Image 1: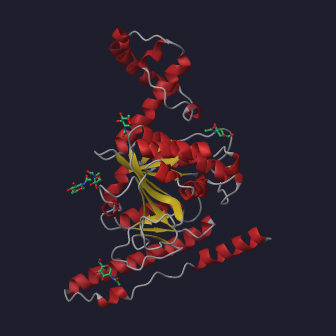
Image 2: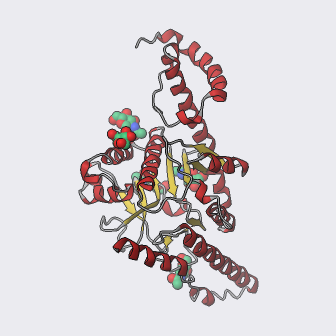
Image 3: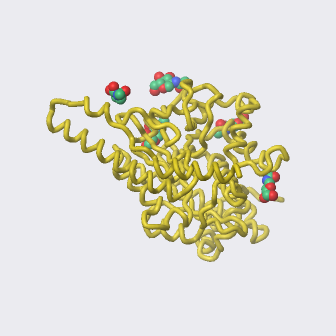
Length: 360
Ligand SMILES: *[C@@H]1O[C@H](CO)[C@@H](O)[C@H](O)[C@H]1NC(C)=O
Ligand SMILES: *[C@@H]1O[C@H](CO)[C@@H](O)[C@H](O)[C@H]1NC(C)=O
Ligand SMILES: *[C@@H]1O[C@H](CO)[C@@H](O)[C@H](O)[C@H]1NC(C)=O
Ligand SMILES: *[C@@H]1O[C@H](CO)[C@@H](O)[C@H](O)[C@H]1NC(C)=O
Ligand SMILES: *[C@@H]1O[C@H](CO)[C@@H](O)[C@H](O)[C@H]1NC(C)=O
């Protein structure tokens, strides 16, 4: 493909106009295809390639609008199941940013990646940062039961998307929506020497560098660099190796870690202490430092919603207690150490039923 360099500047300008016009006409179903082609000279060839470049710019513009000045953002996946019901998961998630300590501003850096049109419309209506991800042929709006085939396909699609974000030079925290944000996690994630990837665990074994921790891919921070890009490319490619077929992306990542692939890539991976990045598998022991609470160890969305509502209630009690002790000036912190999270009754029940069902 020849590309007359003299014309690039001119074409770049024209392409801006073309981009503007095309935005209006391009069906979103093309968004997921060929995201990485970038040569301006392709404008002079087929209209198909023009589309490619245009769409690249759409994601680029979205990322640019949501990231911090150091090119970092928070990514969460949104689908129809999270906006339905009496108490939608999305509402709980957003409420945690509101109730959290210095977490409100983080909403400006949160990108909601919508897997279906209803979710996207809802996101836009709430005036949040939204991006529509389209996947061939499957309705990702419905709740997918953990480890069903559609669930697994959805998870892989999002991993591919995240690889694309890294390739564009953006670092991110990926968070599941069933995670409550109570404190700014960036403070705990450190700025340097903290590893290329920092990932949450179901149960923390006490050593942040020990690969014997069992990862939970519901929350992790990835710095964009060559090593992490390689990891995500390898991770995506693993999907089709016969040994890994049908496994979900989290289990594949765990396997990759076990066979020493992180080391081979020169990746530094830090595992996050549940004292700060907690969940239902292992509660944080300290309200005064907890950053996030994940409804993990819980297979059903209705159970998650029920128990996360109680988590929010517990958090409100804690904040009230802090405010009261400040007023009294006496600093009666004794009360605080007796604070405990309520039992996650709905999740414990649904986990028991899930295990029973998968045994039979
Ligand atoms: C990146 O941005 C976040 C959010 O604004 C901030 O907390 C963090 O300190 C920044 N990191 C660096 C390395 O500047
Ligand atoms: C990490 O950050 C500290 C303080 O900002 C700085 O003194 C130190 O040199 C940094 N280390 C690396 C390896 O960049
Ligand atoms: C990746 O590696 C190439 C070549 O080694 C280097 O030029 C480039 O700056 C690196 N990119 C990042 C994001 O580290
Ligand atoms: C893996 O298989 C899926 C589904 O069959 C396909 O869409 C995808 O392109 C393949 N990925 C790679 C990296 O070969
Ligand atoms: C909780 O963390 C705070 C702040 O680091 C500390 O002062 C307090 O002693 C901790 N409480 C418990 C019960 O560990």
